[in-house]
Structures are given as structure tokens and as C-alpha cells.
Image 1: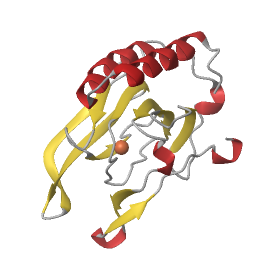
Image 2: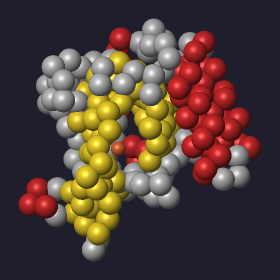
Image 3: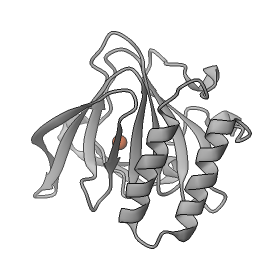
Length: 186
Ligand code: FE
């Protein structure tokens, strides 16, 4: 996506500065949350082609990848009642709610398997959540509503290329690489 869009370009500039100067993941997460909250406080900046849901599954459109792959920004679009697998990230991640409502079920590893922690929380427009191996890396995201939802995710890598783990069919852990829904256009 073009970074000459003022709100998005400003966010990318500030994230790039942050990534270049911060020494600790905790600094990136704390400051990145504020930057992302500002970005999702208004939703007019996101073009229509990055807002399209699919009846097949939730969509993940790459909006920007840092040239050194230190961070990436992805628009996730969930159709009504679509859900993710139970999965991890392996790097820090921020989730900013742009439109609609999503529910996050938190999981923790026990004996090598992700188990539901008993904690779930809702994300409403303007709110920002964080994940990472240091603060809790396993979750499942659901859109439990009858309307589409859109959230903007920022990760500490080119997330579409990262080898991760999810709970697959038959309750077995499996490696996966998510790629992007707009892979063909990149
Ligand atoms: Fe996730």
C-alpha cells in the first residue's frame, strides 16, 4: 500500500524510527501500541481493496513490510462468524481494532500443548492488544458477530514468511507459514 497516504505514511515513519532506536521489545510494544491506537482512531485511510472479506476464510492483506523485514503491517478482514486456528506468532505483535468486534481467547502452553487459559477478551474499535512469546503468544481470534470486522496487525518480522505453529485437525500441532491474501500482487 502506498505510504503517501498521510495517516498511514506517518505511522510507518514513526514505527521505522521506533524500530531503529528501541533496544527492548517492551519499548517497541509500549510505544507501538500508542502509535497503532492513533492509526486506528480513524478508519478512512484504509483503501477499499484491503477491506474485502471472503466467504472462504479470513483475509490477511500485507499493507507494508520494512525493507529489512524488521516489521510488517497487515490488514485482517473477518467475515461474520469466521475464526482463526489456535496459533502462536514467535515475534511481538500488535492488534488494533479498526471496525467491528473481535474476541480473543487466550491460550498457554502446558506439557507442550496450548490449553485455554479461561480468559477471553473483546476488542472494540480503537483498542489495541499485544502478543509475544514474553507476554503470551498463543490465542484464537473470532468474529462472533453478523458483520465483518477489520483489525490492523503489526509484527516484529515479515509475518507472512515466519514459520509458526497451530493446532490442526485431530488436535495435532503443525507448522504453518501464513503468506498473504494479496501475495499475487506483492
Ligand atoms: Fe494471532
